[in-house]
Image (tube, rainbow, N blue to C red; front, top):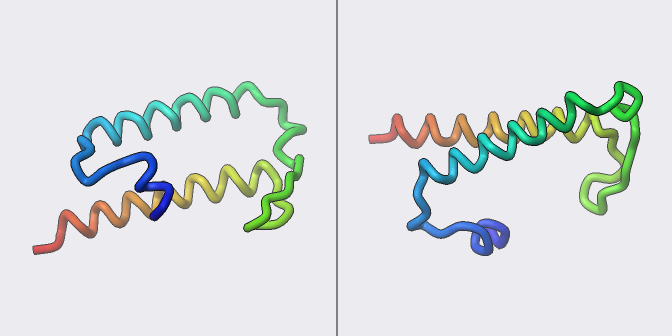
Length: 79
């Protein structure tokens, strides 16, 4: 909630937000495609998640976006 307050408002243009997400995802995909296979197993520490590998973070990130897409789809179906 706090992150959203700092970055977005209820008046934010949804099309612009989606374009931003798409652009950021494309940029990250390009970076990951250039990364050597050896880095996928590298681990780092996060105070909330503990020690996790790059592969874990990528998988979690993809799942997180999928969750939001599902939320948007459900909102559109509501009466």
